[in-house]
Every structure is written in C-alpha cells, then in structure tokens.
Image 1 (cartoon, rainbow, N blue to C red):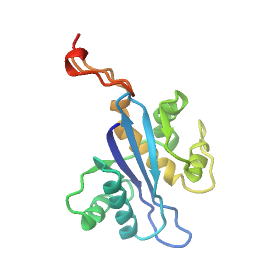
Image 2 (image 1 turned 90 degrees about the horizontal axis):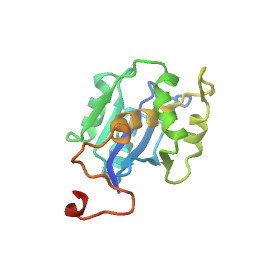
Image 3 (image 1 turned 180 degrees about the vertical axis):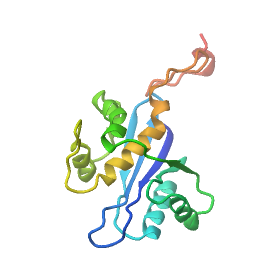
Image 4 (image 1 turned 60 degrees about the horizontal axis):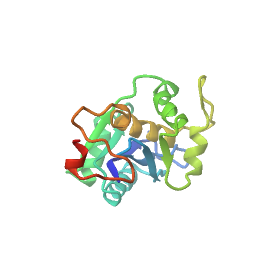
Length: 183
C-alpha cells in the first residue's frame, strides 16, 4: 500500500532527434517508509508529448501530484501540463545545487535498501550508477535519474521523519485495529 505517489518530470529543453529524453518517472512511499520506483515513462518528443505522458501516468497510477523541475522552463512547464489537464496538482521544484549533491540524500536511501524498483528499468539504473562524488560520469543527460531524485526529494519527509507520539506506526503486512494501536 503506497500512501503517496508522485509522477516526476525533468523536461528536456529541446525537441530534436539528438535531444535528451524528458525524464518521467513514478515513485511512491509505503506505510513502512520504503520508497518504490514503479514506472519509467521517459520519452523524447515535444512539450505536449511529455505532458500527455506525465498526465497519463498520473491517472494510471492514481498519483497525488506531478513534481516538475522548473529551472529551465519556469512557468512554461506547469503551463504545458495544465494545457493538457487543467486540474492536475503540480509541485514545482527548483534545483539549486549540483546534480550529484541533489542526488546524495536519495543515494543514501538506496544504499540503506529503503528504495526499491518494481520491475526492471535498465536505462534508469544505468544512469543512477553513474553518479559519483565527482559528479555525473555518463555521456548523456541523467534525465531519468534526475526525475527519480526530484520525485524522492518530494517524498523525503515521509520516508525519514519519525512518527508523532499519537501517530500509528504501520508495518508493511500487518494492520491492527485502531483500538489496538493505542495500547
């Protein structure tokens, strides 16, 4: 059971045959604070193409929001999504540090086994393994990896915060009745 699901978009700035992909991934966090990558819908194409793909994944996975990186597109990124689906919930993030610095908290969660993949995503996994302390070592843009980093950054508090004293703590497979949790 995932308590929060987001579609995350790292849009490319151009639309040519040589352009980077638009990183579009779906991530969620479960009751036990484990994160899951559940889809990679990254594509090349026009702004309308990536917006339609993100909206499709938003509905397919019943996501709570679409997280978009707005450094290069600013208001146009949200506008592009709203031109396809006016009522979609959008969370805008602005990258303020280098890619490998932004990725460090998410990489730590991977190292701790707190993020898992539901299925195989070879292109994404290839990009994730090319992040080092010296930066991104890949030849192409880490579009998919950036998308995952933005998605899990938006979910980070749900994955690491301690529950409040009166907040029930769930295990992944056991749900106790409310009265039993209070004891």
